[in-house]
Image 1: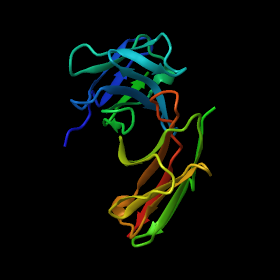
Image 2 (image 1 turned 180 degrees about the vertical axis):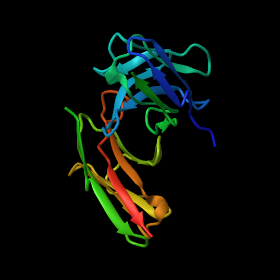
Image 3 (image 1 turned 30 degrees about the vertical axis):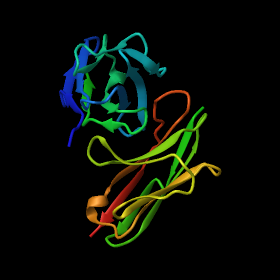
Length: 112
Length: 111
């Protein structure tokens, strides 16, 4: 069964460093999303992406964040200058229509 | 502001019991409501509900939506230890594609 994959599974970085989280959505899906979950808190929406552009973003998704679909298969989330409060599990999701969103296994980001 | 409240926060049952998990929501221009099961990591899709009163069923799990009263329930019958997880409710508002997640119900099924 097709699934969303994410790499790396765990990323440790120093505050102020740039990180890129990678996702491979399900191949026939057109809508892509990033969510995050800080430990012990709710899953929060960051951004949605469709037709090679951002369709919606949350207040969390400020200038430090960017997304890109560099080729036909990958979808990346970049955090330019990480802060301690960026430590969280980051989930990529994809969907064929803007309905049933399928989530990847997540990347745990730890900012020291 | 969109709001999702799930209850109970946590629940401990014995194998074979039936459980009902609740989700009430207030979102702008509601479109659909999704249920997910979260074990160790990623939320796993269970159901999507768009219409009131139509039960969705998958094995021992079923779910129904009430758009008038703004809630949904997820039922699990004959629970098994493998049902132990966090169950997340996520309505989708009408102004975009994002899901708004509740805090979840932690279900623990004891053998």
